[in-house]
Length: 491
Image (cartoon, rainbow, N blue to C red; front, top):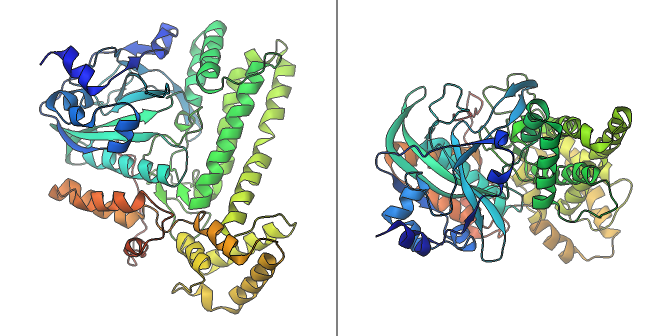
């Protein structure tokens, strides 16, 4: 079977607009063939929406493409250069274990990056092997698809294949490659790299490309670079609010892990909060809690300030005026985030309109949840269905008083209780990817070669607002442990 025949059948329709940018932005690379790739999981729905033939993707030639062993027609594999503040420290980075094979143009004319993660060494590997282990790749698949189902902007996972080769981390592990789909892989760190090591004209090229790809609605008489900054701020304010509303903790909010598109990207040591506590942190390397749950809005604002700094030469010819414009834009983040969060929290409590005391009502509940170590997701789920989850919180006088205030608040709006209930159903998930459930699925897959646990988990995670009886078993809390749950970057 010829390559051309395989590609036509598979449905690849690739363009390479990023490769038409200045050559300093990336390095063209050759694939790093693997020994014996095997398909572990394929996202049928996503593949179809991309215009790909699911059956062809499961063939030997299709799997070879997903493993980076065979390059489809129209592809121009490259590794992107970028920089970033990692835990506050600036450094040169880049795709050290990833390869962008091209941009798939879908039947609807949409453009999506197709990236192979764990595909081997690149000029940016910095001594690493460029490979990835099966566990972390499956973890990103599970979490990113769960985030998509929750209605949160995110990169997505098309497939995971094993390579037939081992990778050495703390132990010997089975190697794997994940195919990641994103509206682009432009990062705050991309702008930081170009700002520091490239020319002013190349910075303008990057900004113009970003506007064309993600923000085509700029008005002709506007300062288009101010428009770019403000739009990125808006998207991040909405994104971080959605993280907070479901208890998601990214774990490594470095500037290179903030996508210009407003998508959640780079699922490393991420996890979901069980008991409500703003200080919750899971990442084993985040010793100081820089990226704890409660800090995420502040870190997002800090990252956006770094983004604004890269745009200063484009904002105004006068440096002082450019700084003023940037500061004015960044100062909007807190209010934008707060409005998104407050609107979302009102919905979680079935509130349609606005009253001044709403925030005090919300904060009162959160304070009680923290005091009594109440589970974040299950508390809102219990309020939705007027049930009493078996926790210390619901039996207290404090909660009874809060509940009375909440019911009075609902009674002051014109919408009936049935409408409030429906709003809460659509705002409070029945299920999230509980950390212990994800770990159980990964252990079965990696240690036993049993993917059925993961497959069942993915099914229930795909409809988090269904509130079906089948989801009840997935809402139980983990057994008490003497050791806190810890996540790792998986590199």
